Image 1 (tube, helix red, strand yellow):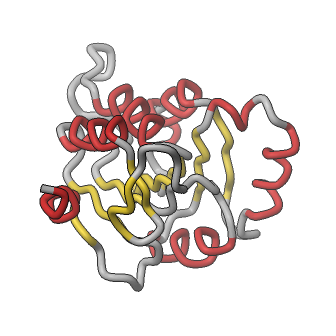
Image 2: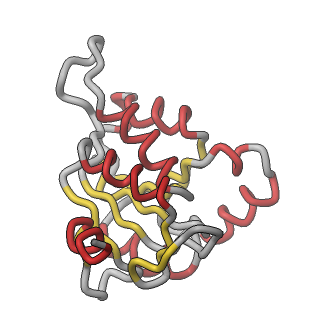
Image 3: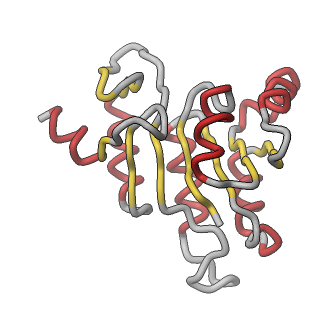
Length: 172
């Protein structure tokens, strides 16, 4: 069961390892990012950041989709981390779309998305604490909303969550 999908440019780091993983009660962490799969140093750093009592899988977006669709993962409680909103949308669309072979009821649908740190870049605007979005990311979020039950913005579990609707309504 997927407990939460988090978007965080830094992927797995102390704040996530100590706060979010424990808060979700997940037994396993899934890092889904195509770039990390081709960077051995990044994979080693992620292994070092993982809590000792948790399992860690590092996959491409397609590999993460395969893992989540595998019935053997049904008993695991999974916390997913992706680097970008585009990665989140791509993964959710593949996982939450009905699969004729598996029927409508998926093993690991993704229902809740947390948006964490997204760095400032050209054309982006601060919309929540440590979250800068450009127009393409806003559009991806609007599309993502059609696939999940809940999208929230917050850095730590102890922070007050802001909903997608409240963040976008402030923009006008």
